[in-house]
Each structure stands twice: as C-alpha cells, then as structure tokens.
Length: 152
Image 1 (tube, helix red, strand yellow):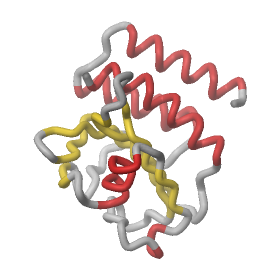
Image 2 (cartoon, rainbow, N blue to C red):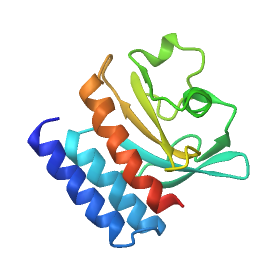
Image 3 (cartoon, rainbow, N blue to C red):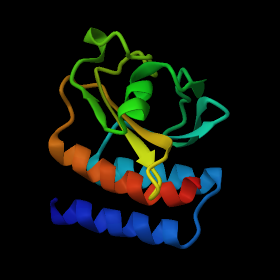
C-alpha cells in the first residue's frame, strides 16, 4: 500500500481509538476515507434490526436508500460471503441497488468484528466505469477493520 494511504489509515485509526462513534464523527470517518483516495462518495452503514442503516456519509446529498434490508443489493452479497464486492459496471449487475443515478461502479466492503461477525459495511461509489482496483480493496478492508470498533 502506498505511503499516503498508509498515513491516512493511521489517522483514521487514531480517530477511532480516540472514541469516535457518533453520527457526526462517522461522517468525518467517511470523509477521511473519501479524501484519502479522492472517491466521489463514501457511506458507512451499520446493521440495525435486519437492515443496513446509514450512519455516516460524505457530501450533502443523501443516498436513495439510507436504510434497506440486509437481503438486498451488493451489500447482501458482502454480508453473505464476508468478502468485498467490487463491480466494474453496476448497470450490468442485477444485485445493484441504485444510490445515485450517476453511479457507474461500486465497491462494498463488509465491516467485520474481531469475532468474525459482520456488523456493517463501507460503500464507495464512482461515476467512472471500472474505477476500483485491488489497491482500493486493500485500503478499504483495512479501514473497515478500524471502523468495526466505532460501530460496536
């Protein structure tokens, strides 16, 4: 992982360890992730009573689905497999739940506790086709590990 992303993960980790947990702080975490890689949009969701519920996000515009069942979307696949789901063209994937009309590609990363339970996810969207790489997956999986502490 490149030095800049490693430094951003260290900053995120320090923020989480300092006790960040409320919605404003979760929005700050989403913004830290977005800014580290110049992503268009980042959302942090928590599983609440069988639904994914947005806890933190970047930008002013809310997603089309701030709450949706854990059985829907790319998120359902990430939950079931406990693995990241990276889609180069969301319009070719029947699992895709539209968040923004301009989204072309998406990566969904499960947030997993140390005991192995999925408690949420990080959703990153791009207006470009095939926008995400293995480097993005690696970075986001490290971020998800840290965010697990803030969602518990």
